[in-house]
Length: 551
Figure 1: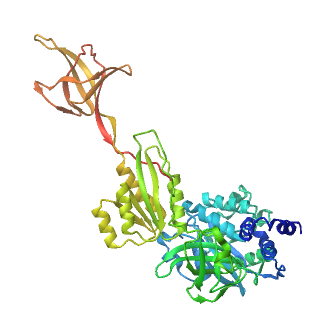
Figure 2: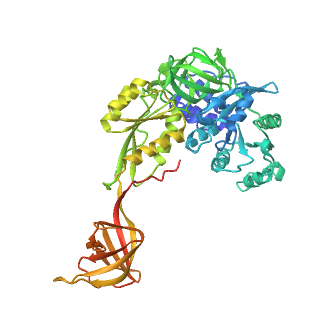
Figure 3: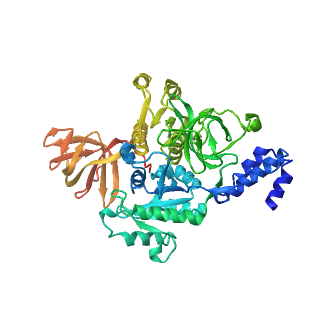
């Protein structure tokens, strides 16, 4: 009542949509309360009677999370009975997907989040959308960096977690070890006296997956998930992309209300009149109820993944909060440095979805190096175009294409413009290509290399006017070359560094002396060479630089 009174008094000072935006900050557990307050404030602003809210059971939203290659996609593949693993590039899920399945005749919505470290942003977004997290841990690999990240997300978002120890078809020998590793990260499973449910499964054979799903339904029952099916629509954007033939599209999960074809949806920077909807199988849909994922068409601009979109009766009600946005820009600002030796590499980034571009840019930001400075000057969703090549040509940059098509004509144009065009469907492979390309741009470093070592055996004084001194030496390692730099070392200290005036083998002048051969060396401005002195022949060589990027 206190909150409703505040809403009543503040409604005269704040526009309706502003109040709604503030209410989005409430945690997911307050979804039903959040919608009730929204309906109340809307009614007060419009001088209407607050509507009666009827809450009904809704399906749980479950995220499958874990480290890369621990079997998340295999588990989801088993649940939806499609061969997604074979279709995914490199066997690794590239961005969030959502689908519904029936578990004991009850619908459950599953989110698939990538395990590769580059996709931390997408995992965090998935945790915000979800009611329950299923943490997949491979029994033969144990707790890994992204496993720990998921545990921390669970604690931060206060989302209940269920552990699925996968790949038990390879044996249960490390099961206890995995559970104790989780204990070190404040996950105490029931087998160790805690409250977190843990199930040993095999996503390959399907063993014990029924038990895992029963645990999911039991946890959902404890949460008592409910939503208003009849009120205004509120949905969360899961992913958005440019789809050929449809333009800007977005997959959303409805949180409140029932979304229908023809409804208007408004976000912070985009809006849509929903022209058509499809489910994850591509079948047309006329309506979508709470916790149901749906692919929507009719967006004027791409909405941001993770953005809350709401239903309004008229576009004008949004006013100035709706504004036109262009492609994703300024992904990473060019940094200033006083070091003139650093190599600056401008980048043009293209991706299949906003999430893909977002994740790639995040990784590029983290690739710090004192040798090379990456700067994304243009980033957008869609295939590589002639315009991208022209931008790269004007800044002498590199074009990165992640999960997008690159027509032959564009590749030819890039070659003609002498622009590096790197494309791949797997992020770590694309980053590997970029690393190799940038290393090729780095100037070689001149380093000293000891190419030969010799020992002074005896000192000779030549007859003649100059009476020069010659050191009789034997080459112990490598070779000696007359035009290189020589060092005389005595008692581990360098007493001379310079060139030689003569190099002889027997009576003949030579340019190079090889290993195991004796020779005579005359040193410039040095006459106190002694038997037992060590001789080093040093050459200046160009060494290619490497980058210590971790991805």
